[in-house]
Image (cartoon, rainbow, N blue to C red):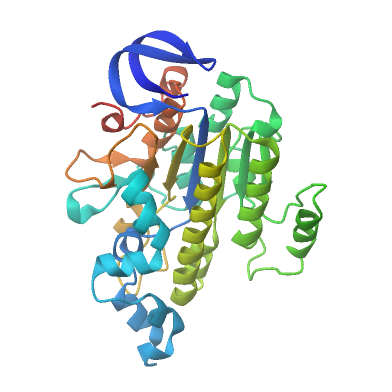
Length: 370
């Protein structure tokens, strides 16, 4: 049973300390799930296929000769985005949640870190701050800052398997925690140990069905291991990081980027169906979906992201909470920062991340106030 999120003095709900005084729009939830789609641009999320990019990618070939174009193209931006992400736009944002980041509607969310590559972006999301002095690249070193995953593990007294991080990119092992084995992680080409015969087979097959990248496995394995973990352990906090969207972009395969976004949408659909069918999660789960950075905005820069490309600071955030009644796209609000996601994630669970870590940013307040 859920309770409205409140501020002021504290009450306890399901063992969670919940401040009290003024009723807010969101509800405290027992379960918290964060999903990131690496480097997915707002251009594709809000507008579907970018015609300028696909023409450049075609390189004098007929557009009709490109299967991804034929599959996802439509004349209007809203029609294109529904073709690309039918679950996200056709159901999730219509019936269950809302999304920040469509700049054409006066909705902006930016990175504060100036590096604008993946480790700094993910750390900003998870630790609630930009740390350009210590996090300057994607080197595999443990995060110097405490993450919201570690915070929730301690605040709720959760055991090893009940705060879990699954990622296609192997460096995520270092980003999500300050020291080895603080959290349960399964990243890159890690084996996933299970007595289930299908999962055992998948764990072996990931080494036979390798991607073109040594440090990033197929999202299909990452997703299925994460789902098996959900079914087996019912963790209170789950982080799922999908990575192929970024790597295909770096390889300048716009067709594969589109296909990977579409596949990620199918994974979101399967995740949501599972949530809704499970009594421990249905009506008791907050789901946040975001990205670690944007990309260049032109046909010549879309595949890249760095400190020289202003578009790389543009991100977006989708929010699903059983008490938050807003649906669709947010419009005309103050600028939001990715660093606010950590405190927002914790607040949906009834906890104050910034109080424990004052250097981090506060939550996105308009998600909570009526």
